[in-house]
Each structure stands twice: as structure tokens, then as C-alpha cells.
Image (cartoon, rainbow, N blue to C red; front, side):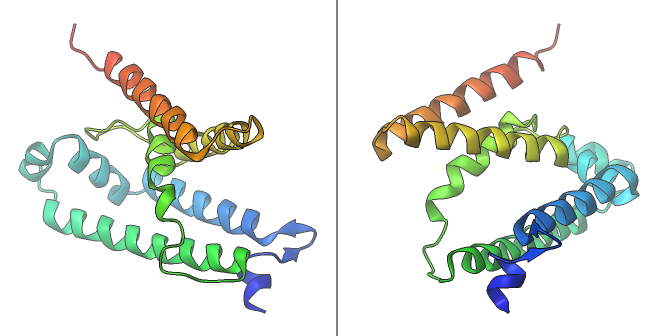
Length: 166
């Protein structure tokens, strides 16, 4: 039952992981783009002092973002353990660099104020394709890390080039 719901199961021929992804992206996109809370998160990320001056409770927004992030990490752990049918405290610890790269490639600025859920999804799909390509090319793990790091540097350079004042 657990692995069917959180990992390797299907619902109407659709893998449960795809359903979880669509649900998380849809809910996140709606909250981020259609609610006042999403605007507060963006404003806090862009300039916390200006957000505070406009009346946004910046510490509360930051705390709530950390809480939501922790809840999503917990859900990711459930999905990981359901897919692999095993759990280990070190599961996914090597994925941090790939996740950061995916978010940056998806258009989120490192210094905040710009980003989207759909962009993060597209970035994660691109990084997944890059990872699969690196594996299919037969590169060793250290070489894969170098290639992923290069993609992060390139994405950060491109994102910073677009934000320079004229």
C-alpha cells in the first residue's frame, strides 16, 4: 500500500510519482502566483527591508517558508523511500547540488525576488536529462559532479548578466 501510494504504484495508468508532482506543482504555482502570501514571499526575497516597510511581517514569512520547505522535504523523503522501497538517513544527500542547479537553471535568482514553480520544474527536468546523459556517456561520478558544477556556474553567470544595472 505504501509503495503504491508514494512510489511505484499507478492510478488510471499514471505513475503515482507523476500525480504527486502535478499536485505539488499545481498547488505551489497557485499559491505563489495567485495569493497575497506568494507576493509577500517574492517581496521578502527581493528586498526584506522594503517588504518590512510596506507592512509585510518578514520574520513570519521567512519562518513559514522554512516550515513549508521542511514539509516538502518530508514529502520528498516519503516519495524517495516509496520509489526505492527502502529508507536510509543518507538517502538523497548527494542530490543537493543537482537541486540547486535545477532551481537556478529554472530562472530563480540567487539573491531572490524572481522565480517560479514552473521554472523550477523545467529546470529539474533539464537537470534530470543532463544527469541521465552524463551517466549514459559513462562518466565517473567525479566527472559528473564537475559537469553539474559547470552547469551551475553557467546558469548563475547568465542569471547575473541579466540583472546588472544599466
